[in-house]
Image 1 (cartoon, one colour):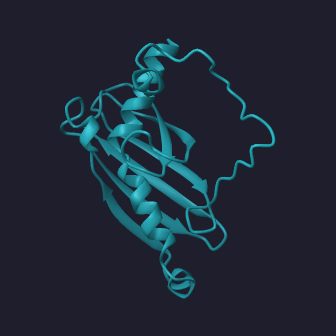
Image 2 (cartoon, rainbow, N blue to C red; image 1 turned 180 degrees about the horizontal axis):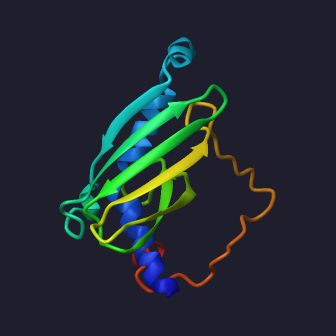
Amino acid sequence: MMYQRSLKTAAIVSAFGLISASVAALASVPASAQSTTTTIEFPMTVSTGAKACLPNASAMVVDHSFGDTENLEVVVHDLPPSTDFDFFIIQVPNAPFGAAWYMGDISTDATGTGVGNFVGRFSSETFIISLGAVPAPNEFPDPPPSSPRQQQA
């Protein structure tokens, strides 16, 4: 089960890696423009690395700003039906992905359509820091045989 879930995770991360560039573009909007912009919409496209296994996948993102927080709505189409996907915000659309974090799950229905609504901070105020004072926790110490980390070794 963990191996299967990891493959699904890799698929959604690879398929929609473009969100990182889109969120980065959102972060570059000047603060004065952000205060007047309440909703931003953009399509996500399948990354080059996932095109072979998800050739028809598509998604639309709607970011609603409420001042200190945003609601990120992600609507996916033409993914494998009745499947749970882990959704990650990533810095770079292809491996090794750079800074990344798990945002939540998106489950598809019988037609391969799914919706995820995520509340967070998706702007230049979002950051990840690792000072190296303590090792990062590893909740899943045994990656599946086809993980990108093992393929690079």
